[in-house]
Image (cartoon, rainbow, N blue to C red):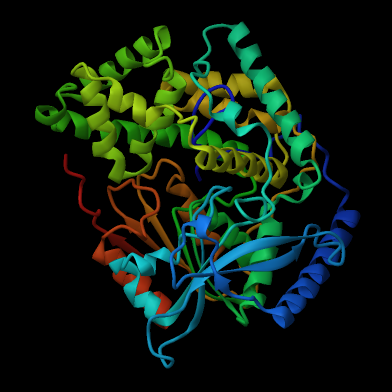
Length: 526
């Protein structure tokens, strides 16, 4: 799950929970809740039947979408509220590239969600046009289909603040020095929540993972598919888990990569706290690697020395923001890429090394927002708005500041890299105006086929326990563990042990007789 801009700081986080006491927006009573769910079940069937009859009018993609031919684009219409399928509707943007194999090889459509919540999946078909070798086998069998989830990108986008203001830096240091600093951050979070209600209030009650799962079923129907083939990464694993729970008989093949813990007790507040711990561990992995390559980066030849250099850099940026733009918040926003993705280990280290050698410009260019990037800033603000809206709506959140303060103060002592950034990112949920749901109880229902789960052992964004939990809940699933690795989103990395199993499952539906452990993919080189 990913988010890269902050209200008063910078981060890339997930969040949420069912916490005893002090919960926002009391849940509906069981009887009314059941009637509403029954209405939604009828509503999604109505919407899916309508979509199946209408289909998708595929055309060349708009020029400014950045999707080259032969990728095609279209629209699928869904209700805002599935309990009222004949009420207000929105259009979801979808795209596809046809399978590259023979008609006999074709097995249907393969849908993809890259995470967020708030990320667009429209670039998925480009894995064919860019000749991504990992996916070449699957591309022979499937049309690759991407989409913008509700509220995202071209699909009735929501917004909470002006994008120019959203990206402007330097922002306040997320680590508070005083109670006054905490009050300032709390004010920013409350203002952000208010801005979401003012700019997008009509959509907020319906920006939920279950509704996105229902949207996925309508897209399936519009494509003419009786059953869904799906790859979900990061938050996309939770979307897939909820879909598999709500529509078990509609699943054909499902690959879930880098798994959000689906336990009701984790969605979303506790998941956020778990992430703080995992990010600290993975940061240490990266800094240890930087130390091993001190001859290249000159930042210290031990983890302790490299970590000390981080503290020096952070303090310097707090005193005098680099280029007047990059303070501690922006540094965290950039440096967190290394714990996220091994592919970013060298680029982040290179920019940092240049700074240490007297050239701050590469670090400034990498970490500072570009006010001239209008489209990028709009996308960043929109992604953040969807992230917040979905997680705030999916589950009750603690409204007591004392709880937030106590939990994050405790964690910060041992895990200081991300903890307070993460807290401020998610604090708008404490004052969220729209209704909350109880999280779906993810589990196996009759008809759900075996699901393939892939997870690196030291993933920071979605800790390993989440994959274990989903594996327990989806009976008959298989878990592939990438040992001693920590990159997020591993099905698009070169690791034949994993790649061949994912491809075999998508092509044949067959899984290993037992769970598998793979050696790590290649370690990054300077």
